[in-house]
Structures are given as structure tokens and as C-alpha cells.
Amino acid sequence: MITLVNYGLGNIQAFINIYKRLNIPVRVAQSADELAGAEKIILPGVGAFDWAMTKLDASGMRAALDDLVLAQHRPVLGVCVGMQMMARRSDEGAKSGLGWFDAEVKRFDESKFWHKTHLPHMGWNDVVPTSGALFRGLESPRFYFLHSYYFSPGDPAQMLATTDYNGIFTSAVCNGHIFGVQFHPEKSHHWGVQLLKNFAEL
Image 1 (cartoon, rainbow, N blue to C red):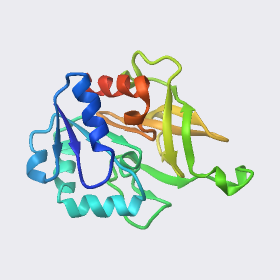
Image 2 (cartoon, rainbow, N blue to C red):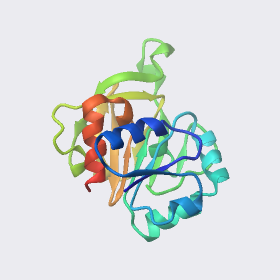
Image 3 (cartoon, helix red, strand yellow):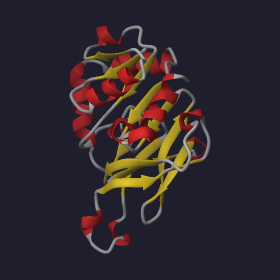
Image 4 (cartoon, one colour):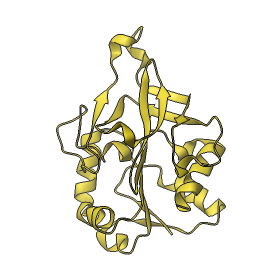
């Protein structure tokens, strides 16, 4: 059973549609009570870091998530801003993240670009897996991105995949049972479907 955390941000229906096509049970949690008993969790996200953290705090689900992930060791997948929220902090705002990774979220260096319209990093790009069952069965995968900030883990061993956008950045991470992807698998056609299936089968 996949539990989608609905705190007001994220492409919830797109995830539901994919899992229904895969005949994988999925449910949506909008409160701490609805999170209880979650087996595998997806934390989606779109928009700004501070706004996402504010919405999560207001939902009343943050403590329940910490318990499920840190104490009960339930597998979790953060997507886009949902991944960035797992870091300690972000250049995008002043609020603290969940701190599930010893990591920071940094803004791309615009001095590497010809002009500022190169941000956000938007559209399809190659993802190069380094290891991990999350990318099982994916050959030369391409995923859809939309972001101006990237995840910088303190431990390079936690990198699951990289992407080149005028420089290499980390596009997927793993800390034991905690996974994050900067791209949007729910918008990435068969590559995204396979990745979401792989997460459900971990």
C-alpha cells in the first residue's frame, strides 16, 4: 500500500492514476490519523521550500512523518520539493527542513549560464543512476525537471543518480530507506512509471 502525503502541494492525482494503472493499492493521507499504519510513503512537492514546510507544519502531519520514517523505518520517497524538504536547510528560505539527510539545498550558480532565463531547469534531461533498486530496469532514463535549486548531500555515498545541467548535480539520493528524486516521475512517462513501481516493490 502506497500512502501519498497530501499537505496541499504536489501532483497527487497523477500519482494515484499511475498506481491504479499498475494495480498497486494507493491511498491519500491528509492528517496524522490517516498516516497511521502507512507502509510506504510518497512526499510530493511543488513550489518554494519555505511555503512547502509551512504547509506541512500546518497539516499536523510532520511529527507523524518523523515517527514513521525515523522510528518505524518506513520507506519514503520525496519528489522535487518533497526531496528538498528532507535536507536540513535551503538557500530558498529561512525555515528548517526535516533533516532526514545531512544536506543543504543550493541555488544553481547563474554565472554558469548565458542569461538568467536558463533558470528554472525545466524539461527533460538524462538521469545517470549510480546504484540502487529504485532504478531497476531503467536504461538511459530521462525524466522531467522543474527547479532552480538542487540537493547537495553531505555524504557523496548517498547519491543514487546525477544529472548534467551546465555541471553535474545530484538528482536522486538514498539514506537507507529514505529516497529522494529531484525530477517528477509522475510526469515522466514510462521511465517514471517504472521508478514508481520499483519503489512500491522495495
